[in-house]
Amino acid sequence: MPSVYIKTFGCQMNDYDSGKMRAQLAADGFVAAAEPEDADLVIINTCSIREKPEQKLHSFLGTVLPQKKVRPVTVAIAGCVAQMAGAELYKKYPKVDLVFGPDAVHRIREMVEETKVRRVLDVDFFGEDTYPFPTDVDPASDGVAGFVTIQKGCDNKCTFCIVPATRGVEISRPADEVVDEVRRLVERGVTEITLIGQNVNSYGLKVPGHPTFAELLRRVHAVPGLEILRYTTSHPRDMGDDVIACYRDLPKLADHLHLPVQSGSDRVLRRMKRFYTRDTYLDVVARLRAARPSLVLTTDVIVGFPGETDEDFADTMALLEAARFQGSFSFIFSPRPGTPALRLMDDAVPDAVSKQRLMAFQARQREIQIEEHRKLVGSQVRVLVDGPSAHDEGVVCGRTSGFKTVNFPAGASTVRGAWVDVRIGTAWANTLRGELLDPDPARSGMGVS
Ligand code: SAM
Ligand code: SF4
Ligand code: F3S
Image (cartoon, rainbow, N blue to C red):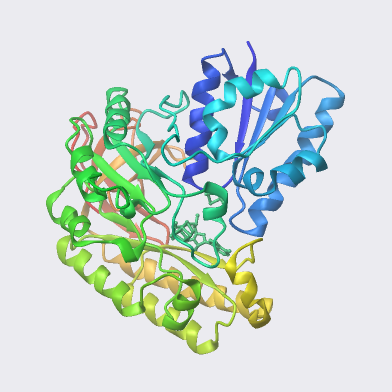
């Protein structure tokens, strides 16, 4: 049987696309290879969001291409770097058999077949009316948590971001298709679903009569057997009252929201073209917390955006205090080809300053996480079991609805996918530790943060 190894860089959209490719290739008899050295087909699903992930493509190719000298192996470059620089990569790496962008994922089987007679390059975008969302379920999906795409592309033009160029315009997937995929996953035993897209809360807005994101949340929430509903990523500008009301009305909607803010300075937000201010962001957060007091909020932050002054950065630190994020992904601004922010590079922030700001932000973020986690000591939380801890024998690891990682000693009967009650004993920045209260993991139910 032929085997495939897919190396995935980047975000949940790429993870999802890799899953769809695995599913389609399985129909041609492909099985998963444990290592690239064992595979007949190696696909590198790339990310170009910052310079670092983009470089990983080149180092990975450096390990895979030499294998062509000793055995037949088909090598493909997929994803966002392929979309941005497909023709260039095709020319630069004549030994690569196939280069294709995210819109060609559904054609993977025919493209692989075609490589038997010629090299293939496909970086075309689909029209809005013809985009086919692949529907096959990933054979490697772990049976407990599943991702379902509700949208592709992004119509925003945040000046730092390459995604609109790599993923094309925003297209909302029909709600019936989304609900059907959720149902099929739940029938396979999945209890936690994450709806994914680059700006999920603008779902359906540009098509008259299309269900909105809030309506979609309510329909998915009603799928019997589903226990936790998550989504990512949402844009603060599009967080409407109808979605906020879902936090009051829908108990299966997770206690965790990732709401990227990028900066706490209105001046920087304007230059990023984010179309909200620090105050409107905090107002959205206040309304969300009124609807769901237990909400755990996390965010993304960019430091060192061109022209960011010490005062602008102080505003970001002040926003961290005001919003009390319980986690964040923070990045140093990375100039990306073709993005509007390149025109601001005369105002570039020196590397050393950006690094200092990143360290200061991350240090304070860590303290806040510890402070917030300590508030949970002594409380009882509901945990969805992931499985045995990788580091600690006899210890099991799981997650709360608020997306907190909880470790606790437990026996072999505490299996992956079970819901259990745990009393929290110790708190660190990234994990909590506790003791198992409910010895009957067969019982299922809602989690709390
Ligand atoms: N669509 C989401 C949103 O609107 O926030 C996030 C998209 S992006 C895949 C994930 C994160 O990468 C962004 O929130 C941003 O913080 C970061 N990012 C994007 N472009 C960047 C750049 N040029 N330099 C540094 N970080 C960047
Ligand atoms: Fe990029 Fe902005 Fe779209 Fe997010 S909303 S994907 S940051 S352009
Ligand atoms: Fe990277 Fe493309 Fe996602 S650039 S972050 S893989 S949409």
